[in-house]
Amino acid sequence: MEDNKKRLKREYKLNPPPMGVFVIRNMINDKVFVGVSRDLPGIINRHRFQLKMGNHRNARLQADWKEFGDESFAFEILEQLNPSDVPHFDYREELALLEKLWLAKLQPFGDRGYNEPILSREERLRRMAAKRNGEV
Image 1 (cartoon, rainbow, N blue to C red):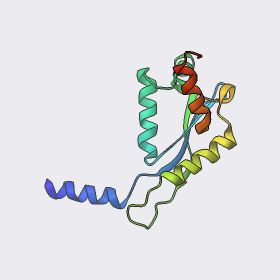
Image 2: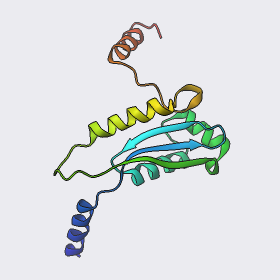
Image 3: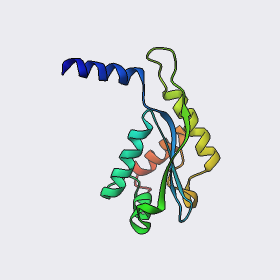
Image 4: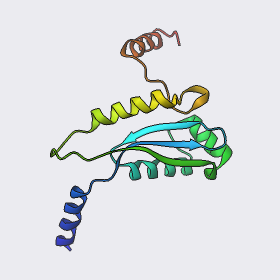
């Protein structure tokens, strides 16, 4: 039993899950949600599960899922990163860059999608100050 666990752990480390950019596409209105992950099958399963359970953190996506049903949505992998030969390579920068490129390409904001625009540091600070001062 213990040998089997060690073997499975070693195989997992040698064969990391696919990582990259994914999209959840509403096939009725063509809105999309773009995201990235180091484990694409895992993140897609998580989003699907949360949507089916009715507790997805993106309220607009959840509302459309409820209105149109799960058969109206497709989960797609847009781009995968190849694993690095460098041990313990940190993929965060590469994933962030891929996400930024796909967000710029698809513009999934407002009426076109479910993502929130990425705000500059200055805009985030401005909004925090306004909220603190009761201006929101």
